[in-house]
Length: 154
Image 1 (tube, rainbow, N blue to C red):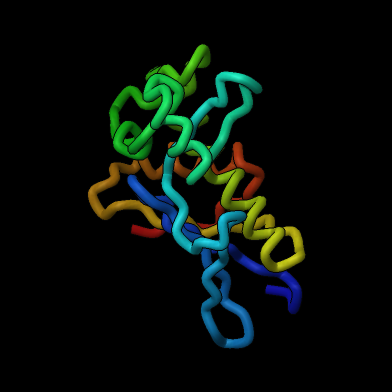
Image 2 (tube, helix red, strand yellow):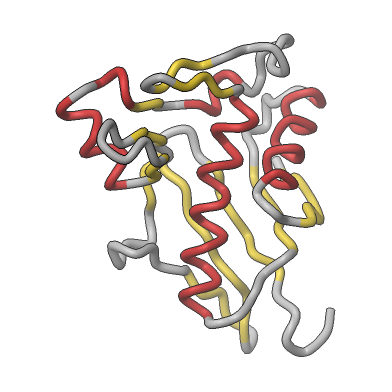
């Protein structure tokens, strides 16, 4: 790994997600735009702008209209038919892979903003009971988010 090359570590959790880098022999938790190092793993669609939101802003959208929000997307990643599942969010339908990719894109952006440099590589943690198909689906989500997935770790 080059001197300025970083690998982002992401705990892509069912209810929350976190990101960390290892710098100067120390792990550093990265904070999102709300200055929290824990981000709700929630995806929402703003009914006014039709834009996807992630984290706290998505969670608040669900208070006014629960149909505009997806929670616990990761639970679908271990389904044998993960490629064909479509989850309704507002007027859109996303696969669990696409929804997870949106969460990962958000984490990528706030992580890059936090450290002031681009991050292309990632290691993502998944539950120990994830099947090889679920691990592959998580890898695909990481790639859709713009990462080179170095490793999926149980």
